[in-house]
Length: 85
Image 1 (cartoon, one colour):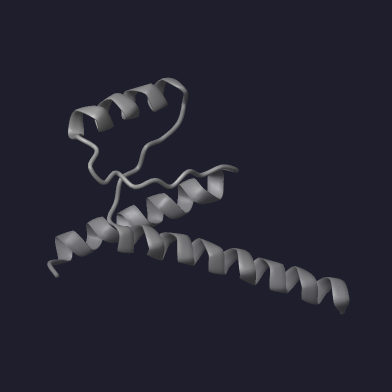
Image 2 (cartoon, rainbow, N blue to C red; image 1 turned 135 degrees about the horizontal axis):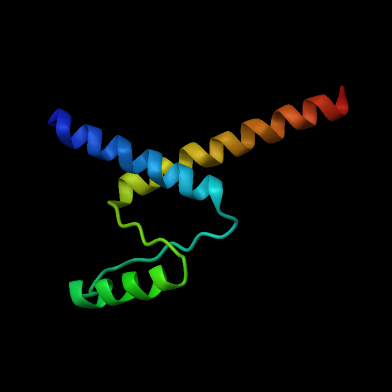
């Protein structure tokens, strides 16, 4: 994999992680069989509502979500240890 693509993927993972950390609600959908014109219309509509549409490869999105989930589990474990100590 070229270093440019690797950096792009790392940046996308970081962006997904930050957005998931920042917001209380996240919607994950498949865009299979959705045309580019329709995606643009959805993006514009969501933008008017203050929402963000982020599109990425499945594996990259899964990686970001896994990292965030692990972070939450780590925080929960620390809080439980402090509570039960």
